[in-house]
Image 1 (cartoon, rainbow, N blue to C red):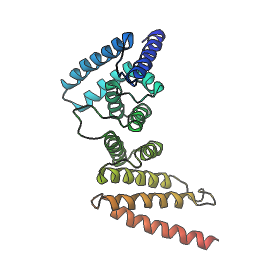
Image 2 (cartoon, rainbow, N blue to C red; image 1 turned 45 degrees about the horizontal axis):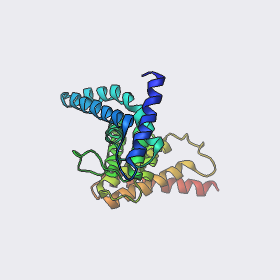
Image 3 (tube, helix red, strand yellow; image 1 turned 120 degrees about the horizontal axis):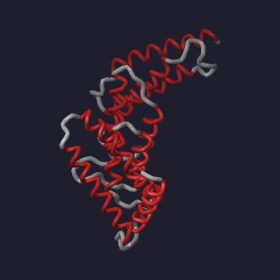
Image 4 (cartoon, one colour; image 1 turned 60 degrees about the horizontal axis):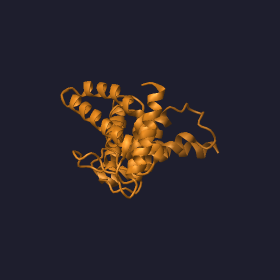
Length: 244
């Protein structure tokens, strides 16, 4: 996409969002034409995806497609009118699917702040989908021995705070946060965690989150980890007391 095309697309997205948020709730002129064009392109791409059976191949195609919609979505975000936009709602889902957290969660923030629905084929709310998709991605990464950015989980936690979502879904998020905090604590070299005891502090935050996960879902699978965590924290507390 040329810079001129990108600039034009962003401006038309802003205009379309502003028009849709007006009392008449109608997109007019060039903005309406561009929005119709974007929706038509999205329909074609959705059909392409529906013809692919492999999840891995679907993800690869989504990685190729997402950049084609960047500028339109950016324009809607900059207008920030709260207008319903089918392109934004679908691209939010694709952004999360491909692990483009900054893009997907920016769109999620827009949708959640303005209480916008997901595409009709989804039977979940935006907060529920966002929470579950990100928590599942984090737990999968951790289960494979990989890391996951705590900042992403904290962003989601803040975003869905107060939202009405299933307890089991929120429990997944707290479990993921707790396990990531344990990993960060484990990465601290012995004797290098500072006078405030950063390792113990992280483990205590982890314990709080795992406890919350257990409160929300007794089958969250954190009981054994909580027991081990309690012993580690007690040991670190004893060491700290002895040193002082």
